[in-house]
Amino acid sequence: MPVGEVNIQSALLAEQAEYYRARAAEYDEWFLRKGRYDRGLEHTLQWSKEVEELRGKLNTQAPFGEVLEFAGGTGLWTEYLAKSSASLTVVDASEEMLSLNAARNPDPSIRWVHANIFDFQPDRLYEFIFFGFWLSHVPSDRFEDFWSLVTKSLKPSGQVFFIDSIKEPQSTAADHVLPDEDDSETLVRRLNDGREFRIYKVFYQPDTLQERLADLGWIAQVSRTDTFFLYGFGSMKESTLAID
Ligand SMILES: C[S@@+](CC[C@H](N)C(=O)[O-])C[C@H]1O[C@@H](n2cnc3c(N)ncnc32)[C@H](O)[C@@H]1O
Image (cartoon, rainbow, N blue to C red; front, side, top):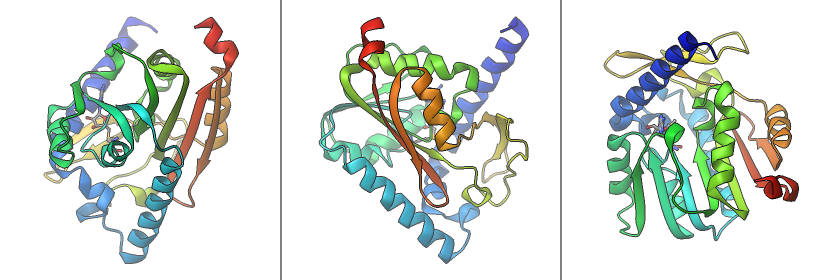
């Protein structure tokens, strides 16, 4: 990538991390469909039903063993991982997020690691890696590098489970606009106080994401819920493991 583009991407990734630091205290409003994310009772019921479906899918993998959670945020999923883990490491670039995560999950055996995922080097291998609503924040030209990191962090028999957003305008706040173009990778997000940040948001279709992962050697199954979410299970093919 030309130096100018590298600099633009680095600045945008820094702005994205800054956005989540600033948003930490109001982050759960999105998940709980409160404030600017409140789209009415029918919508909230459908959202909750689909969240339950995701929890059910995640639970099919329990017990998870030794777990690494990338971009754990306020701990909405850490809570479920902790219930069925032999050990749990949570990585996030925001200290504000990590302290909310620790408050929600007062379990001294959880290891919270303050780190930038794009620089992260695992100090051990894990049996299960989870990331919720993170993959869409990885620029598409860093997709392969991110999945190499996942491979490098996973035991040969390990499993990955991830969740992310389907491109659905009602998922986001009422004052956010989703780009019309399918190939757009960035958008503007606003906080409750009106501050604006530009972030990466790459929306995937389950079948194209599954194919892209297969090209990298993953045996993955990517599916979706009715309206809001996609989710995927994955493990590595023997042949790719041999190369690694
Ligand atoms: C959309 S939130 C997802 C949080 C959580 N997984 C969930 O599902 O609620 C994205 C998270 O990524 C974190 N993040 C942003 N940039 C990061 C980076 N470069 N390295 C590590 N974490 C980062 C943010 O602090 C935030 O907690």
